[in-house]
Image (cartoon, rainbow over all chains, first blue to last red; front, top):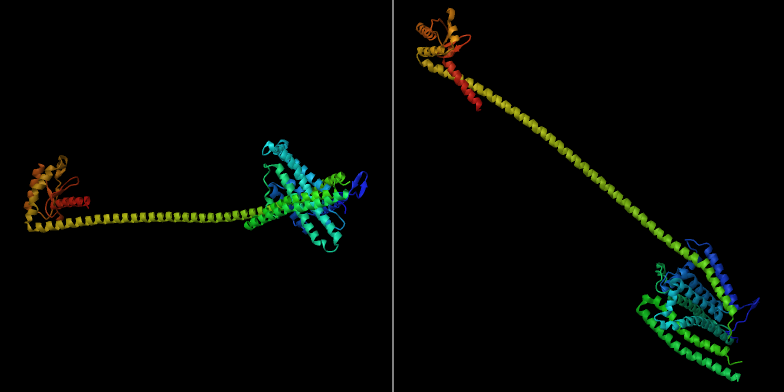
Length: 233
Length: 82
Length: 249
């Protein structure tokens, strides 16, 4: 049994080793870009079926962001929505035979968590200024500064490990089951993997929302009224 | 020597996962029970409650996942195995 | 345990690129479309509201028009009523004036008739008085109708102005003496003597019979007269009576 912690490069471009998560991510990117380009090429006020579905997805994301952050979802829609869609597709890519999800490897999760960490800092500084953002580390008092700093690191680490552990364990368990009984037995576990993947994608996006919302502080602009109706869990 | 260390590592991994799963399992059960109670009392708050429940479950689950990661580290990245 | 830093960096770049791609090609146009649809719906609502407001304004305009119409109708009716009232007043005034005129004319007629009646009554009365006087005198002796008045005649002649007296019976012309009946010789003599005595010279007389005198003697001259008879007395009384009657009708 191969270790899930070790990546073997598929091929090499110069000094850069290209591994399987990168390839899968590229495939996902190409697919998403093609879909987005195809659907948004002819947007109209009378939506087609695909456009209606996309609009429902975007509205649901907007509603979740507005509910979680109590703020206008427009500036965060792209980041949160992309994280949600990408993590969801990456988790579900295990359905394709022979493909291991990119999120089952630490590097992809670390990349996502680092992006979230950077986004919290960028949004916090943008909304409150550098001094205002740094001041949030001294709340409720300066004694908490080390704890707040450690929290920044640990919650990023927990983001990484949570996603990695869930997806990797699913892949790992299916691998073990497959080695024991190849036919029909893994199917319930794969269904559980689908559920776990969706929930983990949602949790990752919501936690990103929570972290960014905590970073931008209380003096955020009034939330958009359009975000209220979409209260899907 | 390596065989002994590997055997001990496997035992340690199993212990870590099993005992690490006990606490989060109990905690998740309590959390879900409380959430069900709250939803039964206040069905109109089901959306907010279930979202908070999922986030909370994920937080709790993280403990179990930590244990799992430790087990995997012990199994596949054991620094004492040459 | 080995972290593949190349994979980590590549995945980070990949995710960032994906964020850009989806933001550019998916979220922004779809959100814009949602916003556009929302704006279109809002515009539709606004249009409907505006149309309703316009309809409402139109309805109010029509109502106002109707009210104006009713008001103008009321004003016209009021004006007509006023006109009718004025005409009625005019007609009434005219009728009243006509009535006043008629009443005044009637009053004038009545007054005239009363005057005429009074005149007729006075004539009647004077005639009646003359008749009465004549009837009464006829019971007296015939002499009384002349001789009782001789003194009065003389006195009247004496009261005349001097120039008139001088002209009376001058140059032998006789004085025209009106008498109620033919004088006897004695009476004629007596009359001539009294007159001559009154005038201071001898005069002749020419008796002229006038039964209307009833009783008395009168001298009739071109420039003067001596009224000395029942007739003259009755005339004076009648005149006084009618004068009184006219002054207090």
